[in-house]
Structures are given as C-alpha cells and as structure tokens.
Length: 480
Image (cartoon, rainbow, N blue to C red; front, side):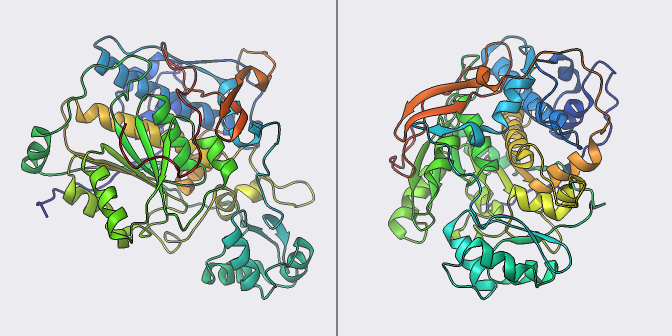
C-alpha cells in the first residue's frame, strides 16, 4: 500500500457566501461548498415558471440550486476541455420541477409504475406516527416478521399491530431485523455538512499513475465528460440520478449490481438512461477479477450503500485509493457519516420522517406530510454529479490526485431545514407550469417510455440522453 497523504475532510456547509444580491444565495452557497470559483456563479440565471414544487420549506430553491451547480460544473469542465470561456448557465425551473419527480412522470407502454407499495407509508402508533419503507420484497418480508406478522399479511393487519406499539419500539424492532421503519419526530436542530471532501495521494503515487493515464484530450461542449469511465455502484434514486447525469454529459457509466439483489424494472427504466448495466458477484473469484479489470482503468467510483457495507469486498475508500490513488470516489448514505445512525439503512421518505420534515409539513389534523418531490434524493444526486465534475476539473488543472467526496440525504435535508432562507424571494415570472413541455417519448428495451427530460442547462448542453435504458444487468462488463 502506498503512503497516503490523508488531508482531513473539508466540510462544505450551507452558510452565507457573501455573494452579491444579484446572485442566487442557495446556488452560491452550494457552489462554495463544492469548492467552485466564486466568480463563476454570476454566470447562472433562472427562468421558467416560479409556481413549482410548492412547500412549507424552500424546495424550489433547493432543487434549482442543485441543478444550477451541476450545470455550472459541467460548463466549467466543458470550457477546460474545449478551450473556450465557461458557457453561460440558464436553468429552467419547469424542467427542474419535472425532473425532480421523474419517477412519477414515467410511463412504460402507457402504464404508470407504482412508486410506493401498500406496506410503505405513514402509520399511527400508540404514541405518534411511524414511516415504513417496504417497496422491495425483502424489506416487506423483514418488516412483517419483525412485527410477528405472516409473510402474506396485508396493510390492514400491519396497521392494527402498529397502532398498539410505541413508534420508537417499532423503529428499533425494524432496525434489528434489517427492515425499515422510522419514527416521525420534530424538526432536528442538528446541522450536517452538505458535502465533505478531501484530496488523497502522495506526489510519488500520483505521478506513477499519471505516467500511464489515458489521455482524454478535447471534448465537445455537450459531452464535457467524454472518455471518463464511471463505475456505478448505486441503487434506488440519489446515486442513479447522479450517474444518469454523468452519462448525459458523455461519461461511460457502467452500473454494477449483485445478481443476488434484483432491481425494479421500473426504477431502472427511470434512472438507467445513458448508462449500461451489468451484474457481478464480487464473492466469486471470476467475477471479482472482471471487476478489478474495470477498476484498473476507471476514473470515478460512485457508491450509495450504507457506510461499511462494501468494505468486506475491498471497496472501502482507502482500499480503492491504495490501488488507484488518482480515483474520484463519491459516496452517498442516508443518515450522515458519523453518529449512532450512520450505519443504518435509509431512503428519502424515511429521512424526511427522521429529521423532522414530515412533522414540519404535517396537515392541520396532525397527519405527517411530505415534500412535493423526493427532493433529498434528486437534490443529492445533482450535487454528487456536480462534485464529480468539479473534481475532474481540479485534477486536470493544478491539483492532480485522488478525491474523496461524501454526501448524505440527511445532509441535504439539513441544508433545506437550516441553510436556505425560507422566505421565497419575489420572482418576476407568471408563466404557468405545464410539465408536458419537459417530457419526451422514447423506445427502449422495456417498451415505449414517457420520461422527463434532463434539466441541465448551459449554452450547448445536451437536450436528451444518447441512449435509452437497456434491461437491468444485461450488458457486458466492459468499457465502451
């Protein structure tokens, strides 16, 4: 193992940036958290309908800011690889709102997928409310078993049992069984970083790798990540949105899943655009050898499993940097990277319950509420893509070496709750919102898809993905 220079994580928070009044503050703060040059934020503007993603929290401002910094990071890399100035960024709020609920707009041959299974949702308990997530069959089975119910128990039986138990007891019993249930709590006062990042690698190790690195050269403005190879070890929404966005921008994205953990066809039909998808069992020597060959020439690894879940396979960040000190490693988790909940499973809906968003958005009768989109998932996804693009730019200017980037849904939730001014600024647009303007139809291996178009907006940006999603897990495990 080479001698690693471990610089501490720099926490990109959501504090005031001191930006000029004409600059959107959440965008400036997010860009600063990603380490972007402050002067570039002035190149960002917004247009389109203002009346989107209505909520008691500033969801519209979060959504457009995350897409804006991703667009700006793409424009910055496009300028570097194209030799011209950084293109102007102009983000359409209608496109953003449509993309943030892409899974709801998806149809497959006219059929609308079911986004939440009957056993998923809010349930009354003896002392409050709990939120469950049982969309995957194995999660439903574990939840029912944890509560002493038969594997074929219906929602009515689940509701009856939950109504007799305290919310925290349900939460802990589910956690112990590997199921997913979280008590609805008041707004948390804990402030988490939006992003944590550090530079990795000694000069000698970096120079050794750089001597044999693949030359990337110039790239067209609509494909600033052309030639970049991304190993996608993600599932559900946040990670796949990040890698779907990198694929849009020209990266060769190969999603790798275990054959023992099937993915929903509908989920992959939504987030598989632009990518290829393969299955490898890392516990099998032959598959592991194939994975190591892929890793040997990868530029980026994106993971979205709970902290420590991939360590047994030799995929902890330090193990990756030991083999490839020039990698960009981006990690996503649910609850943050430290503290007693760091190792717990989680999804957007559960984090909303566990940090107080569900309580904040509650109805007059006390029933917990939800955001108008799974904004923690989608927002984190665009932030991850932006951070990867920024890391690629930094590596190819004056700061070579590895990059370790960490994000969490709870960190994005903390920014929404505590880092963005809840007083919405007066906007000039009265344009009505019609999502059909940002929907398209594409033939795919799954059938005819109606899908949301990408919201990335800069001069010369791609209007759509270069390829529709293929069937999950059916591509060869090779780079393009």
